[in-house]
Image 1 (cartoon, rainbow, N blue to C red):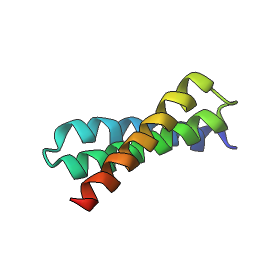
Image 2: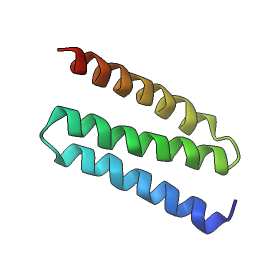
Image 3: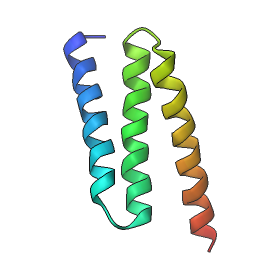
Length: 74
């Protein structure tokens, strides 16, 4: 993939992660943080399988989904 597009994905991932710290509603925090983590996973894949980026962000995505689903049941 184009290096410039990959860099934009990385920057947008960072932006979403930072935005998640600004929000107060836990559900919104989880959704915005999950979007950032997904962007980081994509960034890690397109940058040559950067496992230290892919693995933790992939795990965080699953954790966010788990808690969003758990919250939905209440």
